[in-house]
Image (cartoon, one colour):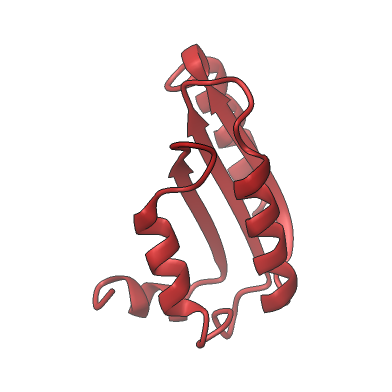
Length: 106
């Protein structure tokens, strides 16, 4: 967190990303979120996004619900959620979708 916190506090936007294991984001992402909970949103940030990856086609509901609750608590606008399942992971089409999403945020 010593490396993450300076970047977090100066961020214009927060992007959370995680593979999904057993219908939830990783323990590492949960630990980071718990560390920033008391701080709240970065002072300059207005938006957040979520990127999720899984081998299965639809295990995302719990992680998305937690993310949306966190956005509401922190007062961050949900800029969007992108998921990639199975063969979509690392595919040219999914990478193009993510790049287009990132460009639209500018």
